[in-house]
Length: 235
Image (cartoon, one colour):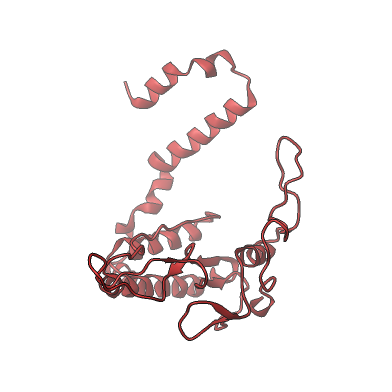
């Protein structure tokens, strides 16, 4: 007996409520997940179908090969792809980690953007690279940190490409120590709202929900103080 068979045999609720729409929706999600893992869709994740030259260009590391997988998914019309790029929480040995991580990032990102552009996909694909905070400008050289940097939410950066955004622009500036924003602040609401607008979604519109609650797509200015507004400089 497979695990899936056992799951279905234990699903007493599904048997008791055969017409329940929520449960049937769950069944459809399950079918889609199994089709992804065991059907034709799994071939999208088979990077052996790519040439050795292409795989080397992206970088033979987890991030580089994830970028290559992302390109293959976008080519087949997958509407949303996330790459989790771990290893940046550098409380210890920050600079040694950056010497490994930064070349991987540069190689994978550049190959992804080049390939999307050469295939005519970049104009219709938004690439958003970023994290939830930066690193402290002050470096802690004492043991056990040995050149570590903590969390820093006051000033950090993100990258946008494709999807109608203008390339080669820098929006905003920090002071010379990277401690605080001194020109054109951009808050999460500004960034996400601009992305929504490029996707044809009204950032100030209502979020559909089964309870009919008045929930906005983005928080209001009172809920989250805004920065300099939507990113008109790059659209």
